[in-house]
View (cartoon, rainbow, N blue to C red):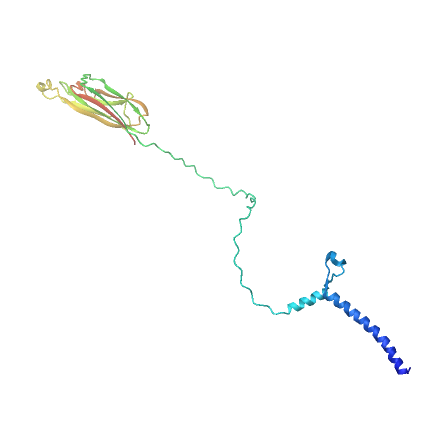
Length: 254
């Protein structure tokens, strides 16, 4: 064998084993990069492969370099949701500042006014006294702040030979009115001629009327009296002759 042939055989023996080793290495890298899909407990299976981190990053770079497509059509609005569960009550707030002292205002509600009146009447009273009570009439007064209106209507007469005067007046529970003044009427007869004075006997229907304040509420005795005038002598008086006499009493608001 020539020396040249021997060198070629020697080189061939060195190169062929190195090529096989390199091919096996490249084959192992390819398998590890592409088809390693083992997960969890599947790693023990013979046909299980797992993707390496390098292969995953390569795939990401590949897809990220693609062009972005046009936006899609917006979706429809969803149905309204149901009401949520009510929340828990909040913490009570602090007390506010104290207000200013108010003014006390009292309101008085009065009942509507109702008429209150009474009449006492007599037929042919024919009362011939010169001094004293002629007639009376009891009345129930409802309020203390009201007034009493009184009226006596009847026949009055005075007769005398010389000048005389008689007075007819009202009393309330035995006292004359003081709010503001007495309620009265008088008849005065002058002396005149001796011939006529002896025959004058005129009866006329007259009235004693007035308004009295300050009378307390409750039962009130209203009376008509006859008496003398101041500084004049009394005569022969007559009340209610041959006719109807009456006392009218009415309570009025102020």
